[in-house]
Length: 204
Image 1 (cartoon, one colour):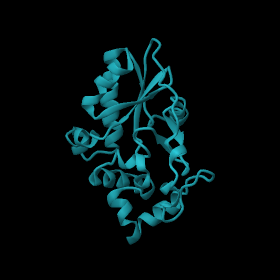
Image 2 (tube, rainbow, N blue to C red):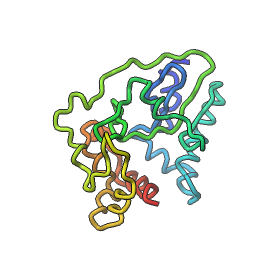
Image 3 (spheres, rainbow, N blue to C red):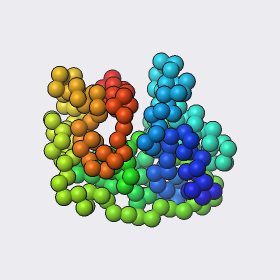
């Protein structure tokens, strides 16, 4: 099965091929995913982990259909090395904030799973990080509490403390300042409602 065929199969579900390392294909959400997800039973049933359950239903069914093995970031522990797999595709890089950046989605990355096919598949050609040609790098100074850095671990407590203050309302309703500051992300912008949904789940 070709990458184009997999792209065609996942596209109606608001998903896209984000890269391939020659062994597995990484599948993530595209700019139209939110509309698809809102129409799903997982979104409406008020049960726990709706996005993970939706991902397993959709990609699990596709894997059975094409004879692939599906793996998901939520499976574990132990957790599969999704970051290493992503970086190996040549379409993801570490950004100056420490978060991964994608050549199309920018910092708006949501990998929903991988499909490992029984036969060989093409690897996506290695590209160049968009950060290399981004002279302003607005992501570096966007976080109000400096929770993100390429040299230090993500300061989750500082981030969540800020989100629980009135000053954190913009992040909660429109999404992370850092992700929104990235020029590539702005071309792959999410609806505010989707950002608020993800931020609420993150804050807990």
